[in-house]
Structure formats: structure tokens, C-alpha cells
Amino acid sequence: MPDPSSEPPAKLRWGILATGHIARAFAEGVAHSKTGRTQAVASRTAESAERFGAEFGIPNRHGRYDALLADPEVDAVYIATPHPMHEEWATKAAQAGKHVLCEKPIGLNAAQAERIIAAARENDVFLMEAFMYRCSAQTAKIVELIRDGALGRVKSIEASFSFALEGADPGGRHLNKALGGGGILDVGGYPMSMARLIAGVARGLPFAEPDEIKAVGHLGDTGVDEYTSAVAKFPGGITARLSCGVALEEPIAVAIAGDSGHLTVPLPWKPAFRGGTTQLLLKRRGAEEPEVIEVTTDEYLYGAEADTVARHLDARQAASPAMSWDDTLGLMRALDAWRSEIGLRYDGE
Image (tube, rainbow, N blue to C red; front, side):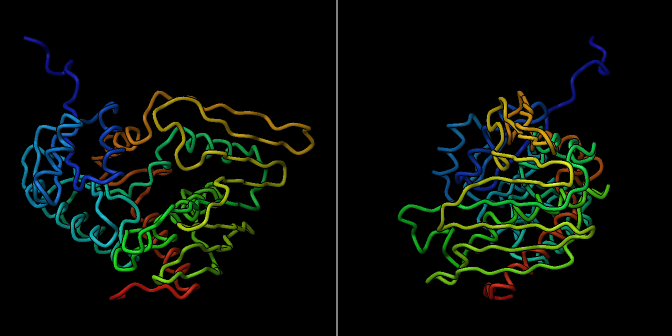
């Protein structure tokens, strides 16, 4: 009989709640993760769940979300619904005793985030907001460079994430106010979370809260922010220039400047999607050319996210640079402030 102590630990059994584009990316990632496997999927229709399950080899297929939460073979649930449904299903998953990875944004506002976190705490389950880039080898390298003083004293951060939808449907989730549409909630969390991370690491902290946020933006015909820019001031004299949008194509990048150099991140949000090598460009003060720093990983981006969950189950929340509960709450407050600056409120707020 084999020694039980020598046997590999059982893989975390995932249930995916919803079957949209982001759910597909996560299913592929879990299939290439070190710690997990997808055991179940749920959709609003049995047909959609069957198609998704057949494509990814998922054995348990449910035509109702609550059926997945009742599935005894599911340990952790990935919430991949539209934004306004995150609070309901993340809370119900926690109440069902399932660990929770909730796609960003964790809710429509900080009040919803607080209630979701309270549900995780009350039911003693893991919870993390799913900013997958925070779990990547590239982000870990950026943090290492800042901590090691490669840029000297950090003074300025620039970060953007914008895209233009071709033939966008006003009723689709990106532009529909009832679905939490707009740039800030869809992609604004990326530049704001990066700025918070870097401003914190620069001062020896896991993240930092901005002292001040100012913003302008364009609200389209459907009432959501089609594109917007913000400036934020952090402790230590660090400033950040942030932009996002769902109806304007802008360069996507991150740049961090210090008093002895600056770092450019050409692919900040989806580095090495299926593993591989990405590059960081470090221009030291006085150097003629930037130093190319290569970051190579065999991890799928969403697989690394799933593995991050598995590594931190006992602590019930992830460690920085992944999203802790306090980091998520602070981020949602910052996004609330950004929306307030441009006059965007959702129904019921």
C-alpha cells in the first residue's frame, strides 16, 4: 500500500458559474494549472452548459446557477456573470460553503464589495477578486524591481486600458447602464489597481490609498462612461495618470518613473496568456538605451490565477500582489470616487 504522505494532494475542484468569453479563458487556464481541475459548469440554460462542458471536458453540467452551488463535487466557484450579478452569486456561493473567485469588478461599488467580503468572513471561505495580471510572473518581477530600488524613488505612474468596440450594441454589457456598463468598471480597475500596487510597494507596503482623485470623462448616449481619464495623488509625492474606455482605442501600457530611471511595461494586463516570454524596458538614468528584462513563464495566465487561489485557501484571502480583501475594498472606493468625479451613478446607488 502506498504511503499516503507521498501521494500528491487532490486538485481543487472548480465550478464555473456562467459561460461567456471570460469563463472560457478561465476554463482553459484551469486545464493548464498545477492545482485545479474544472468539475462543473452552470449556465442559465442546460443547452449552454452542455456545449461548454463538452468543449472543455467538464463532467458536471448544470442548467441553473443554484444547482452548481449545491453540487457536492465543487470546492471553489469562479463567478463569471455580468457585474450586477456578482454580489448575489458570490454571496450565495459563500453561503453554500464554496471558496470564491469573483471576476472583476467584485461589485458595482464599495458597499457591495463590503457585503461580499462579509459573507466570505461569516462563512469562513476564501474570496479573491479576479485581476489575473496581479497573479502573473511579470507583475511579481515589476514589484521586485521597485522594491530593489531599480528606479530610485518612484514619483510618477502612467497606466491605461482602453479599446473601441466595433458595431457596439447599446444593449450589450459594455454600454448598457443596467448591466454596469462603461469603462471604469470594465477596465478602469486595471490602471487604478496597478497605480495602487506600485504606490504601495514604493513605500514598503502591499498597496496605497490615494489622497486625492480628479477626473474627466465622456458619458455617451446610454449614460455610461465611454472614455475617461483620472489623475491621482498618493502619499510620498507619487502621482498617477490613468485612462480607460470602451469606445476609444488608445495605447495600452504602463510606465513608472523614478528619480534614477523609468520602467515601461508594454503588455501589462495580459502578459504571457498561454505562457511564454514578455519584456520590461528599464531605462536607467544616464544610459543611452533601455535594458530589456525578459520574464519567462510556463504558466497560463488564468492558470496562475487558479493556482494563487489554491495556495492561499487556508488564509482565506490572497497575499499581495494578488488582491487581498483590503486591497479590493480600497480599489472599489477609488473607482467610486472616479465615477463620482464624472457624474456616473448606477440605478439603486
